[in-house]
Length: 125
Image 1 (cartoon, rainbow, N blue to C red):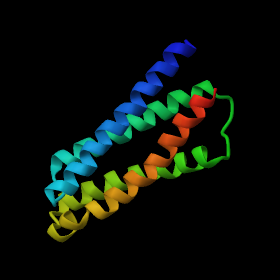
Image 2 (spheres, rainbow, N blue to C red; image 1 turned 30 degrees about the vertical axis):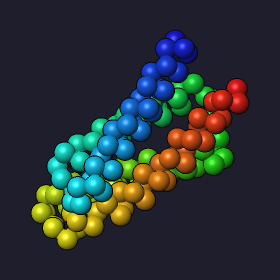
Image 3 (tube, one colour; image 1 turned 90 degrees about the vertical axis):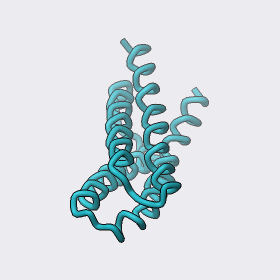
Image 4 (cartoon, rainbow, N blue to C red; image 1 turned 180 degrees about the horizontal axis):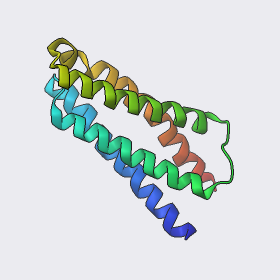
């Protein structure tokens, strides 16, 4: 069970990195938020939440360190980001759609902190 859970959690977290990166950087390169970017934001959020939940089952407690705290912040920011992107697209707010990438890159950058700290912590074991 533990090996399978660890494997699946890593698959989900790496999938989150790939999907979220595709959404964020394709939005930046296209110059405007589009519906298919939103799909990648939500898939990235779902994959990250799934992977984090699975990893949480492998530990007995929450650790108050850079990884744990930035992980909580990153998931909350990803959720806010996806909700806000959804609202921007529903309202057809052209100004917000053109400038949305600034927030996207910020959230993606914050998300990288727990991703890499988790990677480094795993390598130390």
